[in-house]
Length: 156
Length: 181
Image (cartoon, rainbow over all chains, first blue to last red; front, side, top):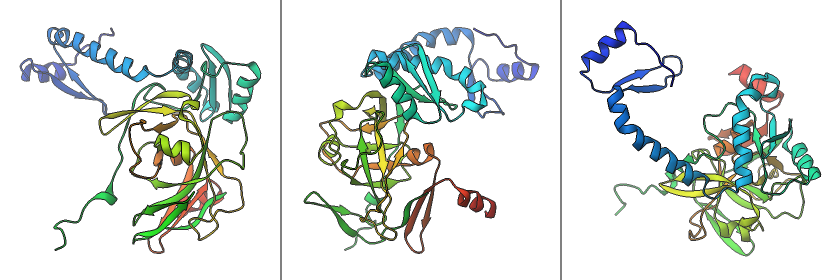
């Protein structure tokens, strides 16, 4: 685990909170964090890890192993692929751990996959663009039903 | 390239959509577009692929959602033919995401249910489409969400005054509109 030293101002803020968890925000990304005393973190770590593991297991439950492995290879390679700006917006195809290729059009990669005789459940095509979530993550979807809202008060 | 050209929608309950002997009710303020779905492979457009109506729902933050019976009866695709890519969670329930090609049909200018005599546009959906479970009975038309338009760099305009919708791929007009605004 990386260790970051507190500034004086941060130390004072923590002391003022009297050991309670303290919220920290990164002004560049607006990402919020919570500072916890090590002892408190140890108490919740096991719980967090087990929740994360069960969430992961739930997310991947129905994905064929060959697709999942290819998704994981794509996700590992994504930071490196993104370093080259010419790759942005292109597609990358992975056959398990092997990069089949990148192309502007995904059809080109599908043809190459077909030509190589890659089994149906052993490849993945991903788009090369910054993404916060891995390809296998469960996506939170919100569906709005404005048209289903009833008039209130009801017409008599 | 224009995909939807002055596509009308209504502020009153709109005329129902006729599909394979069924009459599908359309509510006020629902934008109806016609799409097709096929198994994602290396193929180009096949004109025999059936088309069916969906709601263009910009409040939906996913790409496309469909019930299994609609997929089978309207799209002519068996759900098990679509490779599973992951899941979505909607309203606390978890559904599967599948790889599929979604094709959006250009309309005849000014018409909702008449299609232009051009090939549809294939939407590239890296996250796939959501298929509700077998147990769910269709309570609404399939939904085409905002993510599908965003992922494909499409340009949507809604003229609330004339109740017309436009959709096109990015071109010189996009640049001009950006410059003017």
